[in-house]
Length: 131
Image (cartoon, rainbow, N blue to C red; front, top):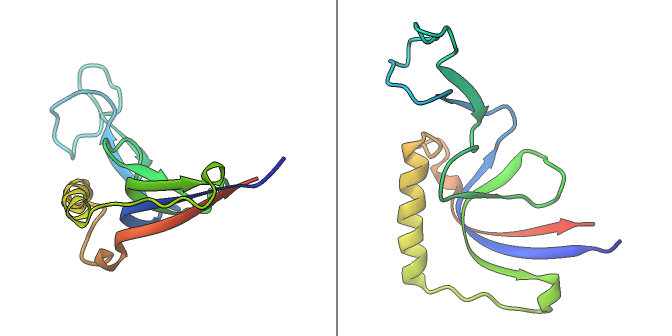
């Protein structure tokens, strides 16, 4: 058993997911958000998921295998790992700006990026380790 270290460059939001939930449709329907159950079947219309579950186009990067709640949630734009030795990941500034605009739009659309946590949005380097 050894130590595996990978560094990721991520455009996204640093967020503590502990206890953060959001409500999504339990199945495909057009009922208003204030309705709780399907009037035909009696099934719940909504379910709660982790704040970052099921958001297409983004991924979660953690510092370790342990789920400590604090993650960077966004799009990985560079990666180097233990197997590559002292590798370098290069990303063009124009690409970072384009990806940042896309990620910002997704995060705002699901209510994760707000004026309160705006300072936590940016380009992050996360060193992930597992053993």
